[in-house]
Length: 383
Image 1 (spheres, one colour):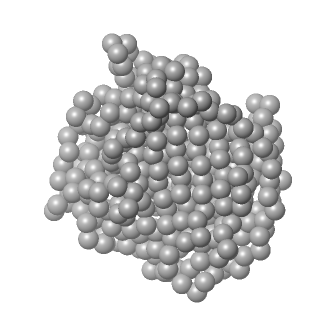
Image 2: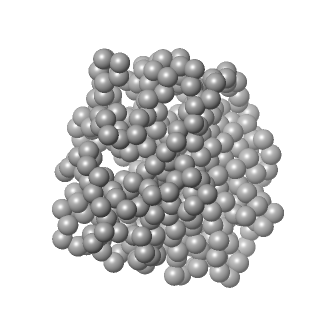
């Protein structure tokens, strides 16, 4: 990635607790309209701050609902091949469920550092920082006190754009520097959800922001994503150890289960006898993207059931492909009391590489005072 640094500008922290009324889209079985979402179950107060549900809708009826608790994408309705709106992201029916221990980051904004940091340690300017361990011996998605658990200040700019801001204090979750963050969600007229990230700091720190939406293009609540056809524009990936921390190497995907340069179903190679697949219980790996200019799709996914196609665009150098291996379906606490079983969703998390602060050969994630972290990712839907 060509990380963009701009002259630092002060952020204005804004809070507008406005919940927009929902629409009445046409839905099929398994899809959930925003009208069916009981917004009262999302409206509450956490740590003295108001939590609300916000709705973005374009002229074609595509709709996304977002909570300012963790910046969660709660639902995302897009038209299928029959022009019926289908909810393609997993989630819960109430804020309480998002706060339970062990919740898998459904739809959340992830920071300060997306993905894993080995043994929860990194060294910056000669000082070693200890982070919160929440994934065995490692730190995952910012730690137990990550951005996914914060109430963001929200401002709905118009019917298709939501701005979220958050100030992370120096030392929060173990990270140095006060970090001012702004994330803007935009639902475009061509059915794309664009996410723009900005951040500044008053002390050298590390930053790696992403979104953790769980997708099922058959419709959330469908039991599998193994029938989805996937393409990833990457000639290499970063292999991991048994705790899913990168070894520091880049391995070619050619001739392996990790080669998605030509479209194939997610399930085609997922159960091959491969040590890497054993470590991740399937795919849970970072791909080194060949093109990441924001104009070329880095990944394309198609559902054989709904005909919905997802294209991912980003300026990030890496893409974490996760095949929902740790979903269990034990609890029926998904939307509409659905269960979300093993491999019933996938994630495509745009990012810098996992554990980059501990690998000099990986692109740097260091942000310094006077610089601005700026990145963008778009999830575009068609049929």
